Length: 274
Image (cartoon, rainbow, N blue to C red; front, side):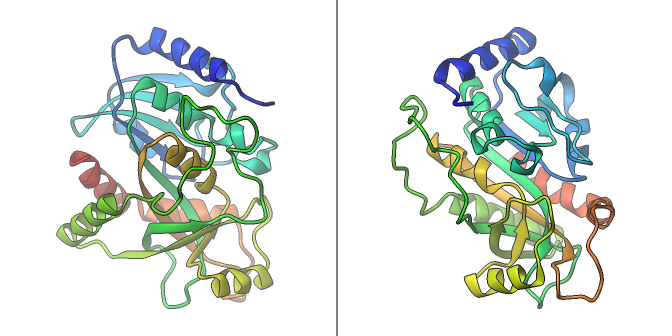
């Protein structure tokens, strides 16, 4: 379906009835196996996606499928515990629907996380990557269709979708915490099948360091409506063809669990100064 501005307003109004005068400053979208940060929110108000008008419902493993409002490290947040994906049957507009709703509620910044396959052979599975840019080609844009001028212009600039100042904050915090933080380019593939070895070779030639099935649509919409963005990837596994073994979702969730401590420490340290 094609969403109108009225759809987003209706969703935001329904949430305001649940959260009252509370206004989130930061939206957090938590990917596969990383939703535990939402459980740390103080005085939470949790709203399942299915109870928000027009909101798509998560079906992917490891995604709780709810929005949690409250304070985290003293910052007013809206936390999406789990996201939706194009491979679940949703349009790209639907995949990024929550970003615009959060913007109407007051969010000005986005922290987005994902688990993805590592393409850079100099790195190791289990490490974290600061997303400095992304590649999303071949697939349609979440901005396709009638432009909603209330959010942004018809042809938005994409030079700095991932805000350089927030990237510098992440580098500084990683150094203070002693967390290894790679920096690189995330390449979007629609899934749900994992990438083939040939596609991974193509991604490497294109300049990608990691490949995954999320994030880019949400970030494009966040940039369109003027939000600053900080993105992190958990390099959950080496991408297809690098190691002589099949890929599985269990591997992704296991890596997310192993990275829980240093991942959460870095994200929370950044959040405190946002």
